[in-house]
Image 1 (tube, rainbow, N blue to C red):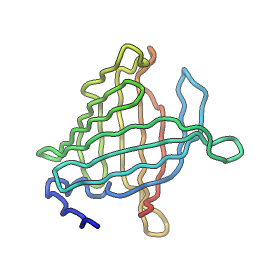
Image 2: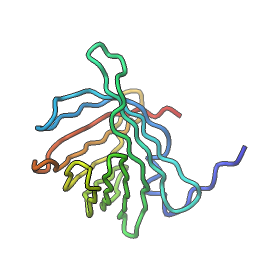
Image 3: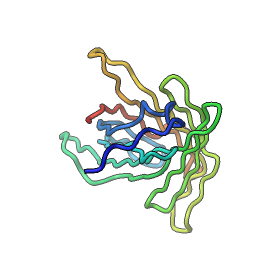
Image 4: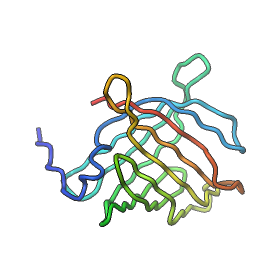
Length: 168
């Protein structure tokens, strides 16, 4: 069994994200029906100055059971000088996003710098994301996030949000 690599010092501002997180959220957009989803998010590192990110979501049916798989995304979170961060995300639907933003007080605010897509992908033109720790009554802190999207001719607006608990 390999030892856990030492955290690169550049990752200190993003250290609060490390681990596996699970929970539930809600989604809505003018072009789709509102939905509830379950989510698993992972932030890991290998000793280099970036976080390795993955997210998987599933539909939560009306009876509370898990339904079909929804979105999947993977990418890298790269801290930059002066509490800035660059995030690259790839989606199996043919969309690649580059976000830029800042990190402060266990909170990350991001906005798209570039959105690229294949000819078969849906039109997505911009995104904004917010990730942050949320204090809970039990003294633990959940990870909350919000995603705003501009797509399919719609302006930038709320699309998805979730509250996740650390599971490892």
